[in-house]
Length: 135
Image (tube, rainbow, N blue to C red):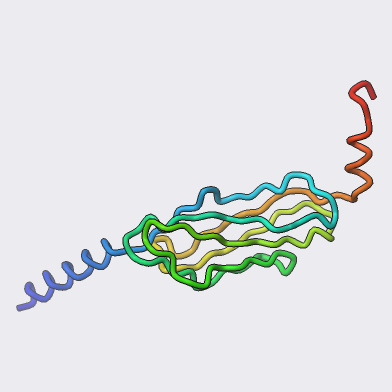
């Protein structure tokens, strides 16, 4: 009798492991490059549900308050794509090195995404552009 329960238990586990959502990002890093203070700080992480169950993103959070991520509201069906919008506060002049944490029902339930770049004063970008190659 114990062996029958063991076989049933293993069978149930293997069935549940096969039916799973999978999240595949086009890229796990967004590079803002060098941008001016006050520039548009919105960027998009694109992903696809490569699994065979609907993907539900339950939470998206940032490593600081200067970055605001926005998760999709509806489940992403198998084979369909979705987006996570990230808005960085570009009024802060400094390097950008932030982590966006995505929690979902996917095979890998927690994924860390990165944003990087540099926000500079408007005048310093203009100075670099106005100098000739000879200077």
